[in-house]
Amino acid sequence: MKLSRKKIEELKETARICRRDILRMTTLAASGHPGGSLSCIDILVTLFFARMRHNPRQPKWEGRDRFFLSKGHSCPALYAVLSRAGYFPVEELDTLRKLNSILQGHPDMLYTPGVEVSSGSLGQGLSIGNGVALAAKLDRRDIKVYVMMGDGECQEGMVWEAAMTSAQHKLDNLCAFVDYNRLQIDGWIDDIKSLEPLQLKWESFGWKALIIDGHSIEEIWEGLMEADRTKGKPTVCIARTVKGKGVSFMENQAKYHGMALTPEELSKALQELE
Amino acid sequence: MEMLGTRDVYGKTLVELGRENENIVVLDADLASSTRTSYFAKEFPHRFFNMGVSEQDLIGTAAGLALAGKLPFVSSFAIFLAGKGWEPIRQSICIPNLDVKLVATHGGITVGEDGASHHSTEDFALMRVLPNMTVICPADGVETEKAIREIVKHRGPTYVRLARPKFPVVLDHTYQFQLGRSFTLREGKDLTMIATGIMVYNCLRAAEELDKEGISAAVVNMSTLKPIDVPAIARAARQTGAILTAEEHSVIGGLGSAVAEVVSQNCPVPMKIIGVDDLFGVSGNADKLMEHFRLTYPYIVEGARQLLGMK
Ligand SMILES: Cc1ncc(C[n+]2csc(CCOP(=O)(O)OP(=O)(O)O)c2C)c(N)n1
Image 1 (cartoon, helix red, strand yellow):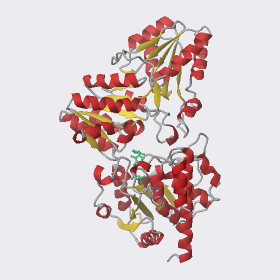
Image 2 (cartoon, chains in turn blue, purple; image 1 turned 30 degrees about the vertical axis):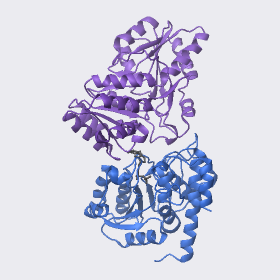
Image 3 (cartoon, chains in turn cyan, blue; image 1 turned 90 degrees about the vertical axis):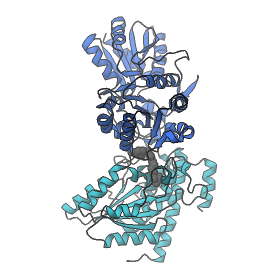
Image 4 (cartoon, helix red, strand yellow; image 1 turned 90 degrees about the horizontal axis):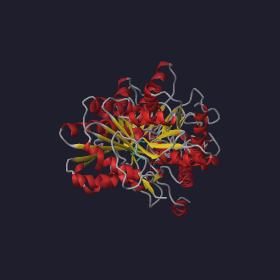
């Protein structure tokens, strides 16, 4: 299956709107994690607006595909997508991180419709995805499980424990993404604890490992199609991305990992995203 | 009022210690900019190890460095150090009784907006229950510097809990930190408030309010939670006949529990434990959360009144 030109343009437009949402809500909250939200947003948009079977009016519908945001700090991206998909009013984004908001600083399934599990401590999402994928196999339920991880997150041992589990159980109903923006909080991954050769690592753990451009809707889509075609093993898309993507002065800057833009920076950034 | 960030003071003190003691090495897990171990990293890059997002590896590596004769200071956020690191801390540091200093920042709920996943209201309980472990939570920046210097002299596993926001300074610069000794900041007759961390300041404010009502409250800074100052607690019980504890931690397993263990078995008197109820955190600004979780001074005043009713 191929995406139509029109659909691709539509997804790009949604991603542009979501990028604006991410920046606005974090500046209003005066905190939060814009950098890693901008790097994974194109993948989230493609999943929620083109690929996944889900129903915003029935967030707990049993037949839905599941998305787990293991790199929970990037929840502004998830909240933007969920609100634009209709899980809750877009106005809620203005309450991010404030007392009594449905939008917690890290995802909390008890507060936010559409959030599949609470996260924020890195390294745990793939194991949870495995659990759901195993249950789907037991129940003979035809659903897909998607897990989004960070590259820094892949320094957690638990990620690799989980990677062995997915392969052991031939979880071809699971597809993971690594948001490979090459940055973590304290700097470049390669200067702190390199993951390379990352594709070979995943392959040697029994996975189908693809390298894609995480900002190209076409390549994200191709990765998803390849994951569907792959039988007998899980698939990981190592997505080459840029932290802060879409705003010139944020791109590849570690400092915007956990720092919101000032109101002045925000208006400059929003101009770039007109 | 002077305000100091306990983590800022930690970062600076670590650099000074690094100059004095070549044996000190520092490890972090991708939070060096927040824990302020980045200051040490800048001055002593070859004695600093950023382990990446790998807290368990962080603990094990520190244990190895200690085995080989180094003096490791290990930092991350409290939830990831004490929480994610707990079993390796137990197995590889506490059972072999190794000299590793665990200094956690971002303790409690004043972490604020990051919410439940990042709040740490269980770390006193988690660390206190480990044999061989010493547990410290300084009241302010002044005490942080003294405590960090003092633990270098002490041998054995040590956990120090610091905070994200700046705190009011309650101790003057002549204050001497003594491991295992509490410090009375204010004398009183009707009850004793025993507190740790930011709650020391909140208790001092509560004591001023109570004073206006003619209630005389002593305030004790219990910065060493373990080994706890048993004689001071027994004295407080004897002299004032009622004890209130206050901590930015769950009411289960922390300072209140530690004091109750002493009081109930040595000198039973009525007690009131002020802390975070048995609930997870929520996102919000740190000051609002202190109010939300009923840790501000009016709630301490209310708790003191209830306590006096039990006397
Ligand atoms: C277990 C754990 N340790 C530390 C942190 C603090 N932390 C939040 S984000 C982050 C860096 C993550 O880097 P990466 O996965 O590459 O995220 P991205 O660059 O995509 O935002 C760290 C260390 C955490 N949330 N969880």
